[in-house]
Length: 466
Image (cartoon, rainbow, N blue to C red; front, side, top):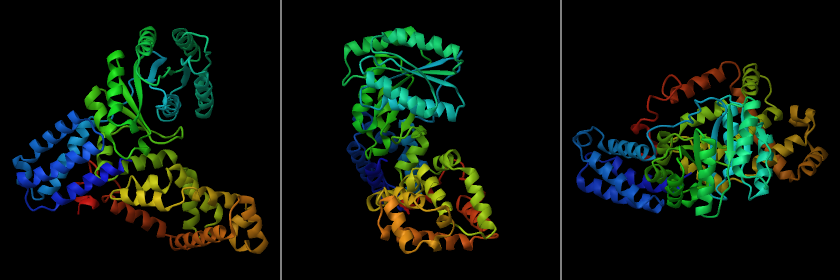
């Protein structure tokens, strides 16, 4: 995520971090590079100008000049300004109204609007414990209605059917009546998209908004369109009283122009980030955490939250008990670990959130075959329960049967068995009190008590800037 911006800013700031003292000259040189980095990231020019001016004003102040580590104080200023530009804090949905709370979702065609409706429904169900009804008022694309029905079934949301012959206002009013009968806490209304902003579209969506009076009006926009995303959001904001933005396809965006421009240009907060195709891939937007990631400091808080939501605690505890008792780590345990890692976004998703590991995540993505985990799981699934419990049985004809059943080669299976053996040896070393020692060691690394110090990673603890 935003890798090119991270690389450019890291290079620029690394030069100033080690300075014994800062002068207007070396600050000016670094700010020129920061300015270029932001422009190359497709950040809107007024936003870049305001950002650089604010950093300069704060950096030439006496506090920075007299600081024991002025270079690190300068980096802290850049981080604070990034947070300010993107919004000071996470702004959650305001659903404090008589149910159903209506959320209207708007956006251009192809931005990922319908998928975002399903992701939002899942988020509200799983994290906010709300009952959710979804409806499509996109009468121009019958396929969009069918797509939403399929996705609603996947996320477990109530779906209200509609047809292309109906009027959007009639569909929405009928859905509200249905949601009341179903005692739904939230009704999410998907609307029609267009290939470009046009008068007819704006008139139709303004009429729909006036008829249903939603508590939240969210604009869905593709992050990869850069500052155009902010300009499109502004055009919608002039026609509709938007309450927030959902930025999609953020995982594929190396630049970050939209994330840094939307708030300043529209005055509306980014509320969610779409970070993948799966219906689980929707994250609440935290400006401070994203600023930390952009500067190569990682996002450990999000990683911890993700682990709490996506890791199967029962399986993890079962494995911990097994290891403590010195029992054998078998291929079923190995498969469980692969699945847990996959749920967390794979190895690249995890590395990307660890401090100083952004480049490692990029290298891993380039050098790792991203289908590797799927093949490993397929091989384990092709084994008998006895083979999974006792890998020593897997010889000769058994190997041929497993590789034919999983569509892999014998060398793939040999590699899997070798990796399992290495992991089993490591687990063996942790038996008894070893696991507790390892967890205590990790706690020490995370700031003594196992948590991060207030405010996240201190400037002195940033690996890229040492």
